[in-house]
Length: 466
Picture 1 (spheres, helix red, strand yellow):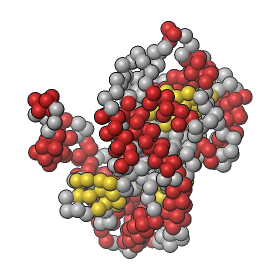
Picture 2 (cartoon, helix red, strand yellow):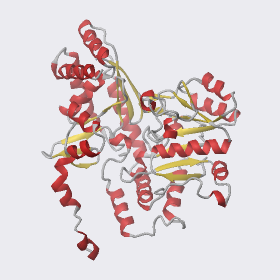
Picture 3 (cartoon, one colour):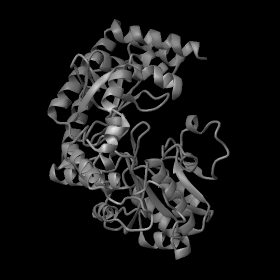
Picture 4 (cartoon, one colour):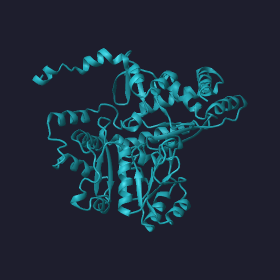
């Protein structure tokens, strides 16, 4: 222990031991008070003691399978030893970080590695989050083209800061935050709508998720190449939001690579890039775009981020990319995803409440729909009358409470569960999830049981909030 440490008296372990049990009360008093309220309501107010890989453990040493990966940031699972060692190493190196007036090697090395996976792109801007990566792309597209408007897809999610909120296709997030930027939504997959807007001549670019996180909807086959051609013809930019789909999630390094010939002008990356340890975002782009934004020494800081390219984030990113290559993580995501999706899709004909299974790699949507039998139809109608999306929540809750599997509903008012587990899962985790999901669906189709008991509770809460 150093002399400074001895003088300080700060002991993180002791602080957590003394105050850790207050976690939900502290959050209710000082942070978003609705989060603990929601967690208490649906029985998600667990206390997890430790985590490793694709699992959590509680105080009773029961394991929980993580099929959520921290909304996708834990691509390698939790506490991968290579990433942990890299962070220890960079802290121990005591680098002269963030001096602001030098060029450290780690950002250049990470940019080099990222661009190796997108060889048609040339430069990288490092920020701190996915929404910041999108904000960068919006600013760069506007400045490089000299045009004010960006197109986006209905139901898209590109972030929640003001600029990215302007291209967020979900009204529930936008409500109450106007005025936003003058951007324009178009239906996903609608090339005629895209061309109609482009003909107005004021479009800087089109930002699109190759697979929408909300609902897990893929762009139709051939859509991205055709959109790219239209954009080039009208001198506008293609912006691929790979914040969630990138870094192997869909079975290719970037999701746009599923379509031959697609070469976005700007690509937004974040989430899994640092292994879940350090906030990080990156915007990859073509040389001419960066050179137009940073056109002179006077403009050297025209777009920057105080913590962008910090040593911890860069070291973590380099470690993550090394692990992905060494452990064939992208290939595993494709294999495990195909296995999980195939086994779930085989259940569609077995359960009338199960409508569709879709997605790519380890980004999978499970959609529920109106059943055909009279008894189930009346229960379904009761839920839909109270609030759309309650049945999906009825499945998520017993998966956690009875089977110790953490999942999420894909969006507000959606009857879709989204699976975005760590990219390292294998057949054991697939078996566990499918077995648990089958048990919950058996219960739901049995006409009673805990699933529908919980459904009645949700209906009462939904009605009370009206």
